[in-house]
Length: 269
Length: 338
Image (cartoon, rainbow over all chains, first blue to last red; front, top):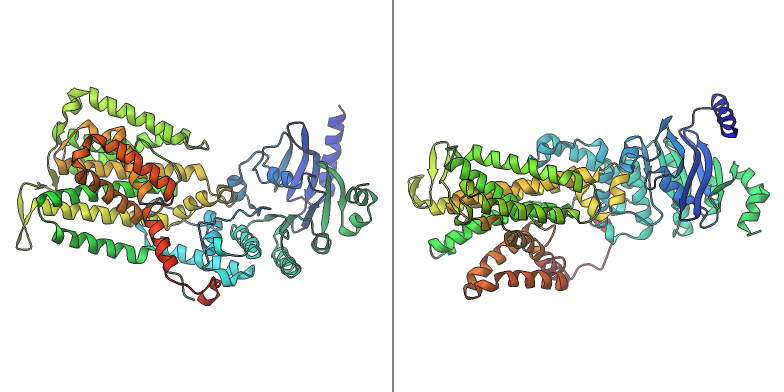
């Protein structure tokens, strides 16, 4: 009874605001008895830079894994561009324009930097099987274009020096940017970055900030999980604060900075 | 900007040259016979390597696909009077359907379930070939018609005139086997170098990365399984026509293990490595004819020692050693290449 009242309220809300690109409603995921994400709802508008912050273990990465289809939610709904997507595998979500990076790099170390980014073009390439077996001219042409696009993206993220380097031989900071290049190669409408600044020094973090601004300026909605508060407060349009898998606060960086609950959670109050 | 040359550029002409020169060093028809068989088996192993080395899946029943191709050709040309090529294609189609049916449910699962399923399938097919004597000749084996292409018959016992030269059928067969091997390598490398191959290598590198960029990983594993099975079937067909007589041994579990050992010894995901593996393991029984009874033991030992001492396989280990001997400008980033 109570629930239906809530639902009518949310649906009344829908008409008032612009259509969200990503909407999460009542999302929950438990591991054993631990509620990693608990009854969480929020919406992300197109073109926003949206940050998710919270103390360690607050459920930020679990939330990302739920949104990107690596985990199946126990309850709740996720909709992307108005389409229900909870439970879809990541390869399906990629087709719908979702892409992500990982906190602990997921780079194919058996490939070069260029090949890693070319992999990101996968969905946009002709994958005709016979053409691949016989190396038809059409395939060669499409591979050349793909290579050029991948090179451009590698330069865009600032890894121009490493185009043909083996991924295994690249420094950590460059790999983090390479992962962003690969995610961008899918031409996503929404890009999720899981701790993009982790392990970077202040110069690299500043370069990353510029990169995220450029990506957002290109019309891509950016969602990031990040511990670097300076970065979060400077680039985010809105911030979601998680604590024990629940929403503690949501708002502009200024609102969040002044929120007493947030201060208490961070200072362990 | 200078692109790094991929491995494929020099490899194929070198292999062609080696295959061209080999007959000059072979003393007699017996050696030529071994070389022809090696080429046919090497082509099979190049296909198996696509599955094992690039797809990251193990087939313990690949000889069954090889045997199905061999028996399809033998039966359709012998008993039913088909010509060689339609029989070969029919066998390949049969194998493709079987591999697809078997692989589709299994390759959705994570882990090495495919090896178990192919193991079972291989044993069943070997038993069927052994028991259905009315069709396959049973344990006694089956004689196979010579290869006929467009009305011309290619038999190792005949002589042919080619460009005014008299050439033995055995030498022609060697040439055909060498061409097939080159074709097998060319197709395999095309595949590895295509978006499909990239997707497969990515599954090895990071399956989760492949998935988030939209690679349907189980689809590609299935595709590569079917391709490698068809490789085995086609080579089995040629092998049957070449040897002129086949026994259930071609489809046996032991033969499957030999094929896998060639891949592991030579070097997974190294096309030329697995050819080397095939050459070494095909020559081994010739050198150890006195120890024939211990052949399986030798294969087992080689498999174990390779896994322990050079898990990457012979050729990748060797080429790494060579690269380490040659001093390089100390770990400079690739900036000089732009």
